[in-house]
Length: 392
Image (cartoon, rainbow, N blue to C red; front, side, top):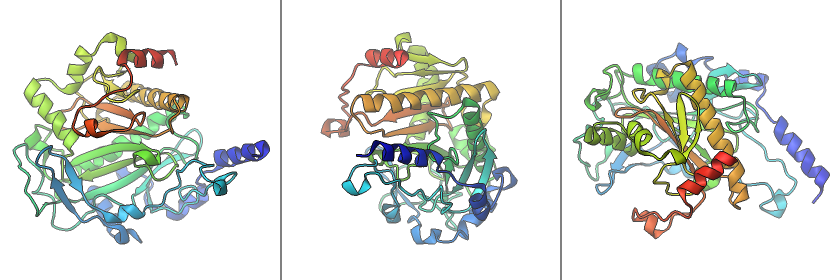
């Protein structure tokens, strides 16, 4: 292997980015605050090519667990560029093309300048939900809703991608906190718009004890690595908005209803102090006492009355951004050290019955049969993991 060639490849990757010129070619809206749910849905309807990859628009529910299942066979045809360089002889020394850096994406509907480059939001070409006509407003699942069987539940909504930076090699683990705060603010703006401008399309969240002005459910996730569902290497988050409450959101609501306190309040009260990784004033990063796989972490907002990103003040946004950066940087550091490919998920827990919190789930251990039975066997000790993370 040629060391000079490898260095040149690294420099090429570092310099890869979506240019302003290419951005202008696909820019549809400069800010999502200029729009509404109905206007965004109309833009999805006319997006070139997206109808080749539409979901089936049906949700089924596993009657044993309450797991929601959506269907879109077309997602199996998504392009993948995140296989590690050097996995095969033909890959060695090759710098892979990036569709995002080349501007070969759907139309951009939000863009904001960072200290270097910009962050932007566009439409997911392979959506898990789509604004199908006549399915949604009166079909939200109420707390008493039983699985409906083979007919399924019609589901509708919008599926977005947020690209953390226009630069290929920039993401949460290596960007300035002030830039990450801006990324969060754009996410929060999209979350608020979807919840508050979809009155005529989505079920009211009033039945869940949420504010009457909120409609539908916003899911925010991050997948990094092919092992955990990621397809493109360029750092990004996914945002899905639908009329169906995700199972985890339902579990948060049920926990609060049964325990008379939300999960955030409970865990901040009961989790041992020795499992705290770092304190950010307005938020706390910790290892849960029930850690299922090594190096799983949770980031809790201390004001457990806050349920959504858009409810956070400036100090809370900075604390959350710092916690995301710290947790993801730790994952990037520890996984190669333990001989694992960097692969992880981040899940945002927001919505009814929730004290806002975030779950960081590195793929440090495969799931086996016991785990699929709901009997996890963790190959590390939470106290030792927390200590290692503090010392890192």
